[in-house]
Image 1 (cartoon, helix red, strand yellow):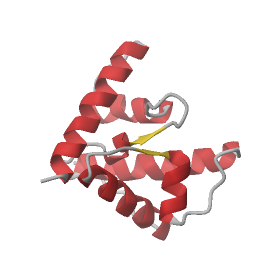
Image 2 (cartoon, helix red, strand yellow; image 1 turned 135 degrees about the vertical axis):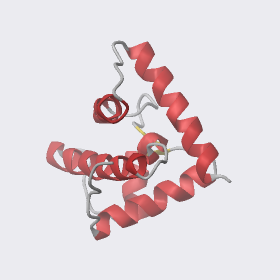
Image 3 (spheres, one colour; image 1 turned 60 degrees about the vertical axis):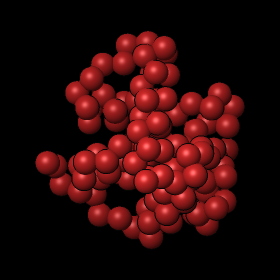
Image 4 (cartoon, helix red, strand yellow; image 1 turned 120 degrees about the vertical axis):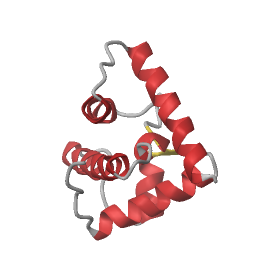
Length: 122
């Protein structure tokens, strides 16, 4: 097992919202995630989008190290209702898999979201 990423207050706020969403077997878009968590980032700002991506990546990294599915699988783009590119890059690293196409990404994203819903709704 690899080292866990230390959490900041922003990590904890975002994780709390993601768990609530997963328990309801639901999804949330990035903008609503920020609003509900009280984390002040602007999704129209590329730097802030990167910060959110890093926060979500850290959370999913730790979740997988702890034997749980990628919690950020329930956070989606508002436009296309799929996880962001960073999610799939991290998935390839965490699970030592290759997602060579948009179809492969879509299938993995749905499967991981279902595992997340299943885990947290118990």
